[in-house]
Image (cartoon, rainbow, N blue to C red; front, side):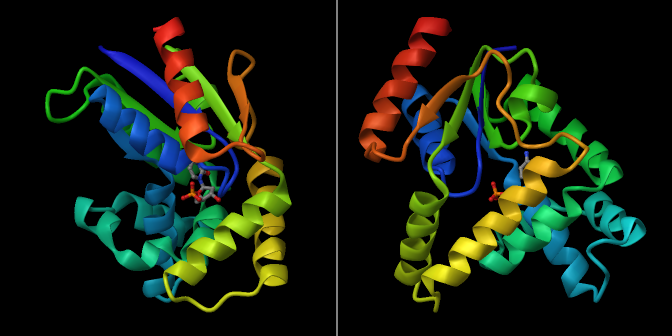
Length: 212
Ligand code: DC
């Protein structure tokens, strides 16, 4: 098993961009674990199911196919909220756990290691990861970033609504009983509120080369 880098943090803290860049620069495989929850939530909605109903959500998680992860609509905030709702269900998390662990252990395409980003990678999915980063930023900064991202994609969005959605999702993700969002004891905290993305990437790469 090669190097495993775990990157956790709340929504729009910059962890996705960071994880993708670190993986590309260090030739590691990358898994955006949020996509698994987004695709599960999205499938429940598509099937006319109830996001808080365990049977509906578990069935969607069990039936996930690789193709389901490529839908552009998964990037919308509706999918994010749906993801956060199915993500509180323990059996859904258990169902998605094996895939994530296998990806970390046996990275695809012959890569020498992997980068996984999510909420519980350093605490639950890969507690033995070689490097754990917890990427965070203030709620207001994250809401501004998300607003900009939505607007750049041509989607209509207003700051107060984006901020409220962010607060709702943070609360649900960090207060759930099963694998809540929190930094692992041995994670390095990266606060990106006042840092540009290139600085964040440089810091992360230097932490990885020190630890790995
Ligand atoms: O990282 P993201 O915004 O795509 O995640 C969407 C939701 O999925 C997030 O609000 C909570 C859930 N999630 C999770 O519970 N555990 C993960 N490892 C990744 C995401």
